[in-house]
Length: 220
Image (tube, rainbow, N blue to C red):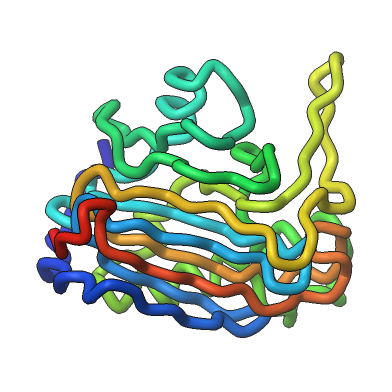
């Protein structure tokens, strides 16, 4: 486990429902109490949303791609998938998915990966890692706290020989997915700025984040 740990301020009760439109290329975050739901809406279609989640009580417990893939038996996430921590505990569960398949292996773009893949002229371009660092810094998180992330809506097919690619998305305007917090969690989001491959249709667009109280109407 990463030795770095922080305790995030206890989440405020969710008062029924609150929504935020996240501009293209921008970060977003929230601390959600157990039982609350987060709905991510792809407002204009084919917009990748990079996503990390941490246990708000101990951020050394955070999303683990290997634990999640082992638990689901699949590279892709959809309704019923559980985002597992590096302690093999559930963090969030996908309760609704209108797209059907979301990426777990494509990772987050960075200045370094852009330069390697697309050339030195891309170095100045904003990237998801910078969004994660800026937003995570608000909670005492740094570069050592970034781990392989989920990419909602991103289309990364895997061929029989193991090769993969980032191709045109399979989402559409207005499609959404919803996750339920299984414990108090900190969520970090980068509304992906990538313009060098088709993950955002070469034109990043806004998405909407909606947080609601638990299914019983209580405010956890």
